[in-house]
Amino acid sequence: MPQQTFNGSCLCGAVAYEAKGDPVVALQCHCLDCQKASGAGHVAFAAFPESAVTIKGTLKMFETKTDSGSHSKRYFCPECGSWVAGRPDSAPGVVALTMATMDQSSSIPVQFRVFDKRRRPWDVVDTAMPAFPAMPPR
Image (cartoon, rainbow, N blue to C red; front, side, top):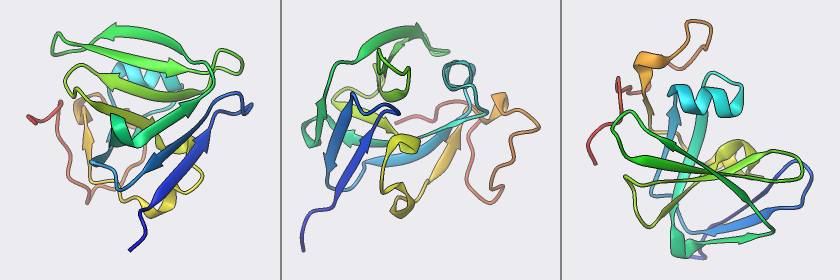
């Protein structure tokens, strides 16, 4: 069976990526950092092994301290500001691609929500999806 490939890009096209294979995990994050970085109630991510992801173009990085005390790096297009990827210190060797920047994200099932304790009441979600109040243990 041929290996699945996911392509995506920022809004202006200055940054593009390709991820080969199946994601390790796909989730929705409701943490306050994700809300502020995106301007939305949550961000959906598909995480891939670092070796499976190729990014073309220049990204700008912004690092924050997480609720757990570790750090998370977010990567944005310096031209249009699209948030393309993240690398949490809690998941070394993994690149989390923002699913909204993917061309074929509809084939990736989101498995659960994290930081549900931070979810805004107006952010309507699938309540049948498993949810964790914070980040679950790995």
